Amino acid sequence: MAYEFKLPDLGEGLTQGEIARWLVSEGQEIAEDDPLVEIQTDKTTVEIPSPAAGVVARILVAEGDIVPVGTVLVVIGGDGATPEEPRAEPAPSVSATSQGQSLGHGQKGRVRATPLVRRMAEELGIDLSSVKATGPQGRVTEEDVRRAAGAGGLSLGQAPEGRRERLRGVRRLVAEHMAYAHREVPAVTWVEECDFGGVDLKRLVPTVLKAIAASLGEFPELNARLEDDEIVYLERYDLGVAVQTEQGLVVPVVRGCDTASIDELEAEVSRLAEAARAGTLKPEELRGSTFTLTSAGKLGGLLTTPIVNHPEVAILSIGRVADRPAVRGGEVVVRPLGTIAVTFDHRVIDGARAAEFGLAVIHRLEG
Image (tube, rainbow, N blue to C red; front, side):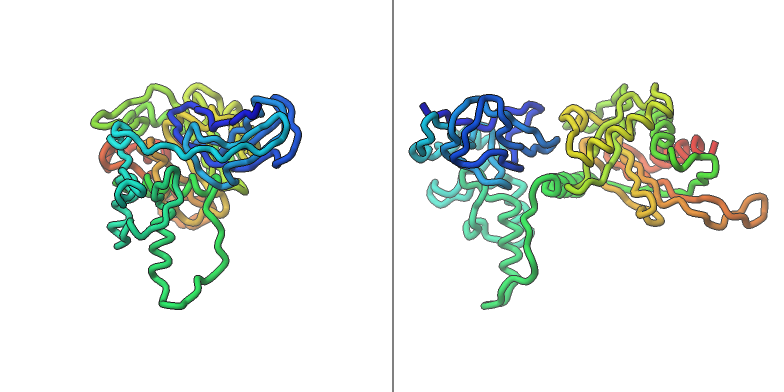
């Protein structure tokens, strides 16, 4: 008997996933627990084993497609026969639409789209009824609206220019996350110079993590979250560290930065960075950060204005450290100088407090 494998509930409140990579092909014989598919969520990539043995009769969802939990992904048939086409999913109930999903195509011409997509279409001057929907159950997605806006800018008979590559995987998640943070968070960036002469630059990240954790204890509003109309002050210091990988930017979490030693932080940062670049981070290693540190090293530029890693309310970045002229005791000397920038959610943090926090971090680094 054929077995229909559906996208499982992956926890953490996730309602959908992207098919990152199929590890099997149609007609292939597989055993139970053999690697089946890699699913990309907004947290990490998860490899899912096959729940049944048999021949892969049919793969129903292509790589790069985003589907909701419960969607049939693949049919595993004992004899390898292709099953009948799956029935179309029913239209959403009233209770589903009351949670922000609009009724749409197939229901008297009304368009299915979230309020966010509707607002985007309105800002871009796009008629949603004319947009080809590619989302689950005929829903118009942000990508659909952007595609329609791009096509609308072409002259009659003009062909699209350039090589096009679909936004997917980690890059898609980063784009969505950053766009949301930029759109929803009223962010302000404070910048100041820092003398790194007393810091071992080979241990820069763990040293700054330690300074941040100690300073957050003095300024708890930066180690917080905004949930509805409440500020949630967190009593743990689990700091995210931005790591650039071939797949895109990921932010693994270094736990207990307030109690760990510099040596322990250095070892953990190194381990997480290696796992991030190898794509072997566990889902729990990407969850629950309370504040984020980012540094691009020699590529960092003089200063950066990072985007807050929502749902956090602040992020700190380190600019490129280099020998520059500085005035010390009335004389011009050469010092290893860099910048410390703090971007913060102005709904939660006042400018003066953000500045005081940044200066506290610098004071600890300059020792």
